[in-house]
Image 1 (cartoon, rainbow, N blue to C red):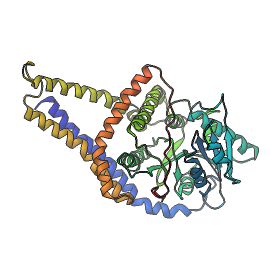
Image 2: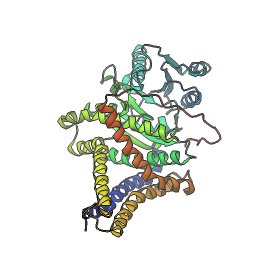
Image 3: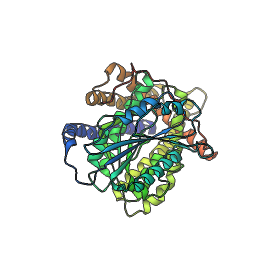
Image 4: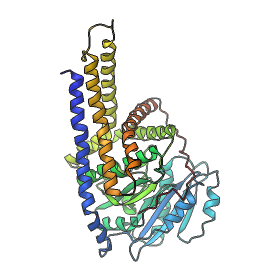
Length: 440
């Protein structure tokens, strides 16, 4: 048996096996979801938030921000709590200020940032919002322990139960932040459907596994943190990193804060249905992940992070890069093997016939395709809001989606080596109310 064939067997066994382990966590969570929903009305114990601030960072969001803010203002938590929305207009030069000015609601605050302070990244916009909320909280004599600060992007919609679910998890005083499930609402195209498969099923299961390990990561959309926990991180909880949410989660873990994840509340956002824009987004995420590797020594040295949690965090930070270099190595071996199979190119290398090459390729195709089909079935059985006719093409496209991630990783390495940090903001799509899914 050749080395490549052996690698194919190992990959075929381990990759679906890992996905099946995630499916098991997801199935267990789904079985208890109804019981957790019934506990939403549990009596307060004095630790849950009384005030929810929802921060909406907005830079040229005229196409979506009106509906996002209206939806955020309509959210309500348990009895006795209040909801306030803070929009950070980060130097918009489109119709965003006019859209916001037309919203007359006592719970809305608009923080306008003009040059030279504006457009320094989402992290700095969120820091400005944090300082405003902190100052208002202290001015009115409120307890920062009982104030939650959530982030919903300009294209986001929170489910009706989102504040109630955050409140339930924050009854535990050790919980400093909560991350909710993320869904894609414009999944009428294959790329949108693949991203919903990624977020709603695969990333959801990964976060459930991390919740069990105590290593939940924060996402850019649908994150909620106690104001007191953010205050312990200084004047700028969010960094200038390209994935400020990932770094915030790492800083909170290093600070001894517990982060929880919930699958029964979600934020729905736009998916990117243009390959070039999607590649640019994933490259930015990968570059931010690369920047956060600088936290590895601090994670290893921390006495607040247990060994099993440390291993999971290191895997999460390093796996994309190990995958990228591993894939490049395998492709190089394949290239040499194919080249040697051609007449006149010397003795064969690892693969000794085209029939053997076809068998190896079949194993790799099976190993890459099976997980997507499994997750399409999980998505259908658990969420029941999408038909298989749309999920199956997404499942078959999933291996190509993974390859796009590998390309993004290598592009990110090039950008980091070249010290390129500037990024153009992702343009929103005009939303069609007729096709937008209604949050559960």
